[in-house]
Image (cartoon, rainbow, N blue to C red):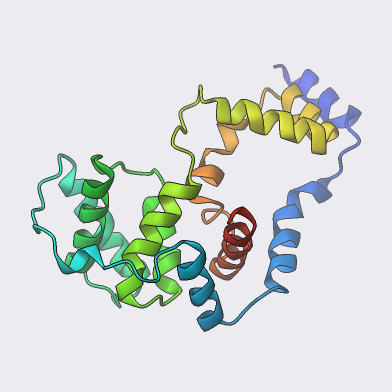
Length: 211
């Protein structure tokens, strides 16, 4: 698309710059619904059905032999730094290695697991429930197919057209389609775009609505 066409699209759209701050407004509104940490943890474990589930980390083979084990370990080092070393690298590596094995998959970089785990660990869930909460949450709510050709993006496009046709048409005019900008939203359930507190509140509402 030429610069003239782009300029024309911008000028012909009645959208203002205000739409760019919608995520900040959403975060502010979500924060007003805040519940205390203990109540949130209780809701999560109950609604995810893991209250009485044994912790798999108490009994596993402790074999660190994934094909992408080095990449996993490096990401665990970064996560430990983000968590200010409140969790050790071996502890995080055990967690994610067992997670991958239980899912029957190799570790995949930049898929969103580490960002989600960061937020869940900041929630201070008792370690007896932490692994099961993470496993249930990611396997239940994250779409299995995030490839560019996934039908997920077509469905999102239809929803956007229905709820905000003006914004949808504007993005289409720029050839900016959902697969280009929404993968991280679905892959991390917005944890890559929202503050930790706003994200946890949004997840709580999501778990309650879906459950």
